[in-house]
Amino acid sequence: MISVDDLQPCETTPPDSRWRRIVTPIPAPESIPIIRRLRKVEAYSNSGMPPILWNEAEGFLVRDPYGNQWIDLTSAIVMANVGHGHPRVREALHHAADTKLLATYAFPTEIRLELLEKLVAISPVPDSKAILFSAGTEATEAAIMLMRRQGQKIHPEKVGILSFADGYHGRTLAAGLASGVAGSRDWIPRKSVRHYQIPFPFGPTCSSGEGPGHHCDEQCFQKSLALLEKHQIDPELIAGFIGEPMPGWATWPMTPSYAAALKSWAEQHNILLCFDEVQSGCGRSGKWFATEHVGVVPDLITLGKGLTSSVPVSVVLGRKHILDEPTPGEMSSTHGGNPLGAQVALASLKVLEEEELVLASAQTGELLLAELQKIAVHFPEQILSVHGRGLLISVHLRKPGGCEPDIELANLIVAESVRRGVLMFGTGRGFLKIAPPLCIDPDAALEAAQVILDCFHHCVKKGS
Image (cartoon, rainbow, N blue to C red; front, side, top):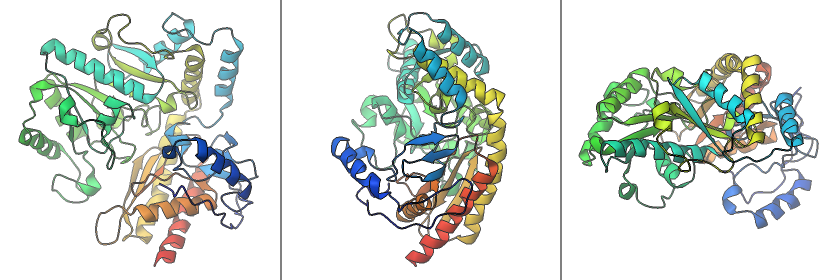
């Protein structure tokens, strides 16, 4: 993450750009007292972002109150798929706020019906039903509960959950156990709650022994199964698998051959598959669902973030018999499907369709990826890999001579890019995450890539 204690203003050179405008030192001196007051009352864990005081965000641009404007490559943590403050989304918010219906719990409403019908219509899972929640982590918890409920119908102890190491699914208990992010602290040991992990098939650092750049396939999955066997984990007692078909940290989809092997193994042992598309769904990957890149249809899908591009709404989509297992009162959410959230989610989905933003994600993403890959040509010792699909792209930095992530250089690049009018956030894991709103102007995306390249030249030279 960015140093949370570094609030020393740094002089900047105003960029000559249609989209970028930096007219103060960064951080803006006027913002520092406000940021310091915030840090006095807010938990320390929330202080890892660049010290930019957001005041307004529109489309793919973010502004502070002091005249500065950035090209946004964050989408506010991969959320603003249709763009910040889209007129249709704002109209839906105003319309919902002007009605006399702001909270309904699980009581029937027409707007919830409309949203659920839309979600079921676009679902790649046959015979789908859906249930609405608030945050993505809540959807994760529900999906894990659903898989365990199905497992218990087969055997009382069939409650194990399998996931990928290094993934991310949220911060509540089951979601945190499913995540296993490097360096995180588990609340309780995984084995005691029957939660197991296998390596994600990440080609640039293939953990199956095939070497960097290997196109992870069925062979890699078989080696993961050998790990389960080594630890005496019985697949007959595993209820479900949850994983991102295209993890937000890797931006690297499972290969179709790997996914097919996973699917075949799951069916053999009556294990349900849940694909977490909270980050990669809703057009982010250049397709409606990243699932479409891997060629396998799961039993369950979770969505959130880009579903509304604004307010908290998440969903579990899945096969009807799985969603219908809990009885009334056993699976619901206080704010799930509230009229305001449902109205906004429906508007956001319509914008994705009518403005062809899924196609835009694929086309702009292809241009942006090609431009970002030039960084690896200029800095082969510092770059491990540059890859992605749609507008979910990552630049993985390494310390020269190996594959160890260069966290310090990544943080320097982020800080320098912010000073130059391109907004990113520190991942704390040695990679740059590039996830602009899907509506970004292609020329603005290419300009941002050039700024990042310039930042590499500046930071690598400075550190040498």
